[in-house]
Length: 145
Image (cartoon, rainbow, N blue to C red; front, side, top):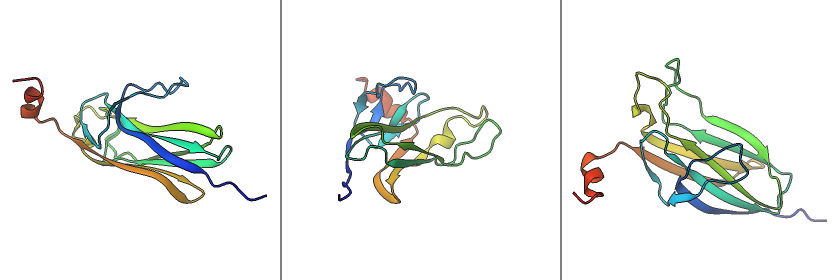
């Protein structure tokens, strides 16, 4: 019997509601965008729907722009693996803007964050987000001033 070819579709990307890793519910999309403000607690990433791949190993990696950990060292890319749980499965890959090093502020979060999913050595989904500092003028303009 021929092996089935997985079907992968990115269903949303951008800024999401808070995600609880312990819950089965995925976060809800708030704004479709690849530009993310460097505000602490902002959740961003993408959701993919994967069909016909139950039991297949999925590798993920998030490349940070140079975030400092609590010891002041640059964080390594965050990576891991997970098995596809069903033949019609939604998976969220995302991160949150955090202040990990007290003297750094949020500046180390600025820059490009690249998120990649691969299956069997082939990239199946990828998105780059640009985390930018808040422009005070735009902040007040968006509020009608």
